[in-house]
Figure 1 (cartoon, helix red, strand yellow):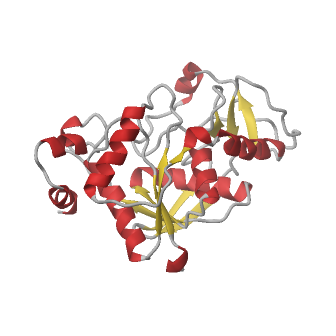
Figure 2 (cartoon, rainbow, N blue to C red):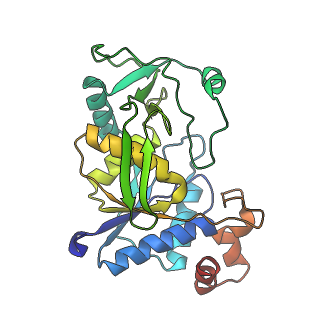
Length: 273
């Protein structure tokens, strides 16, 4: 990696207060950028209109600043970038990489053969709506979900800069995944890939729960002819019961820790020990 060109990013979602687990990952991202004398960007991933709130945007900026993390402005806001995602989606649709899916939530629930891991956000899709090979590309229809057609049985391999060699098999570890939602918004996978490319991200630092998403995103990068990105996945912080930290852990929210009188140095020590 050329340190002079290093660009990383922080990518919180404003659906709750940042907690100790977020702080650990974001601190690592900040340190990685510092080590490479690079640039760090802040991306506000606010594509969940039901749960995203401005108060959480304000809180995450205040809490990150309090912790001592610095980034290069301005804050990148995903809800203001929909045309970029739409253009990428339409390219995938026109090249036959995407297709409409009419499956309901009930249909999808019935297709799950086994409970999916807490390290994956989407069950393996059965292919119920997948067009036969050789079918001409579909035209866009509103009020539809759209899936990315994976290359069956292909192994997607990459070397994580923290966790080492990784490999996932398309069709076994994950299936055709959502890229455009019926509410006319992109999925996390598509928006992430488009933003990383458009903002010239060279390394993505994030939690190990997104390792499988990395395999999906590599496929999207290839289909859209976008540059490859380096990845550095961090172990997840867990509570005393072994459950990974989530936004429901209010006692470990940075805001709560601050109110209890903890200093930024105290917080760093909490996830560094």
